[in-house]
Length: 341
Image 1 (cartoon, rainbow, N blue to C red):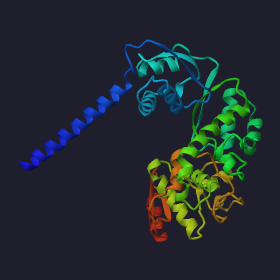
Image 2 (cartoon, rainbow, N blue to C red; image 1 turned 180 degrees about the vertical axis):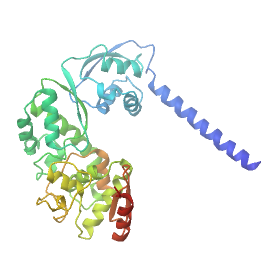
Image 3 (spheres, rainbow, N blue to C red; image 1 turned 180 degrees about the horizontal axis):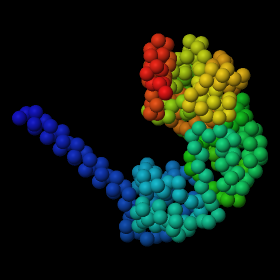
Image 4 (tube, one colour; image 1 turned 90 degrees about the vertical axis):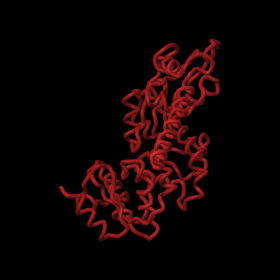
């Protein structure tokens, strides 16, 4: 009987927590003041992300909680539809009404377009995407991306690290709403502004936790981005590569070989891993010369704060996850189990 009461008590507590959490969320999505129809003029700048939009709305007292606004915009699929422009909004508008105005209602601007930079894109991928969507010069975009120090006075991460010139690794993955008549330099600056904000708020305060330099962090993160398919494993994958670096073992990353080859293969042959390239970490010692793509936030944090494990190997299970092991013998057994065609 006591056990039954305990179970019922736990169930009741869970239901109570759910009720209050749900009430909190619903209240946060309601209008700030249903009786206040005062018009508030708001400017959403070109290149704004959902996080930027939420901050602008909160600063103008148009929403109650910027985290829940961002969550709800993503949940309803409208985070990638937000448009830059001038809007007339009211405190009496709830979150749905605000999103309707910012994505397809009054004040919407037809002179903007959305560009989405996906985690793991190379500079060439990004330049190709931007040139295709906005009609800008692919060659000019790449020229700018290969000369990052022209922006050193604009961004703290470049000013702090004058050795960074090639911008691969620093073109922040996100969805941006930009003006269609933006120049090549305008677009690159928008991506770098987002990265710089992340650098200042999240990366720089954490750098004391790692022995790597900042460029090395981004370099490693770019490898983790391609090797780990699920976020929950990224800190373990990062730990494997850091453990290898610490004992002088080659990284032996398939992702770097694929980058050197210029195409992606799930299974590499012995001929593939013999390619003569400074990016082939089966042959070179340490990290490759530059990042191999632009990693996302989760991969960057994983490179700074890896899991506290002593793994040296991992093998794909075929479902996106990996089997991690400490010894080569255990790794070979796992490979025999999971890499059967």
